[in-house]
Length: 252
Ligand SMILES: C[S@@+](CC[C@H](N)C(=O)[O-])C[C@H]1O[C@@H](n2cnc3c(N)ncnc32)[C@H](O)[C@@H]1O
Image (cartoon, rainbow, N blue to C red):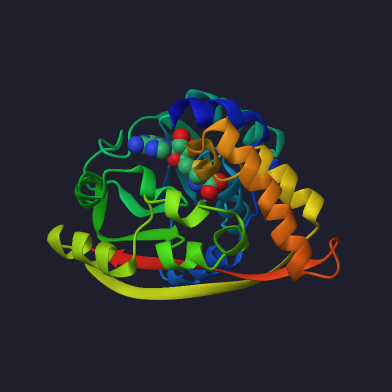
């Protein structure tokens, strides 16, 4: 997977869809706090870190943590280009966070928890969050993945992606870590895309799931995906579907 993320680092932002609803939601949840110190774990090329930097004032500071150096190089260029300064880049593992004890008001992780060792990541979050700190986990659940355009129409996509969790599994990890779920919120999105764009995304492994196929099976599956889409949608420029993700708010 490390190689996959290194290969895709320079084009990651261009092949993924940015969800801004959870950003506003988290901002609202943190409105009582002044001077927020946040860490974005598995930050990738920084598209979510940037959204946070844009929506808070100068008293906000974000630690961008990822184990992939190529992603972090891309993040650093991007955030500097956008004239943001209140961030630092920390290469490190989610399972052994490069952060001090009791130092963070908030930890967020977007689309990455299924790559971590969840018990270790939770225990590290517990160690590094301040007493009234919040952890927000944004992810797609296994059942949400089954119902996505890829899960429905791309052969084997949802079956091969066996790293994602169901809510009950995450709940049980959170309970075992002696942490509590404060809220859960499902965000729904009406997506529209052309078939060409979907094919481009799959060919560019916009989800790391595609990197789990061997080449021959991927090519066959992409062919079948296109046939399935043609059978089920009239306008190949405007394919509509509904995506869902969940945001879990966890407290110490
Ligand atoms: C699917 S990407 C998501 C990136 C970003 N959060 C976003 O949504 O745009 C997952 C990221 O997690 C990072 N990652 C995976 N396992 C990790 C680990 N154990 N520690 C730190 N980062 C990790 C990968 O390098 C990658 O950048």
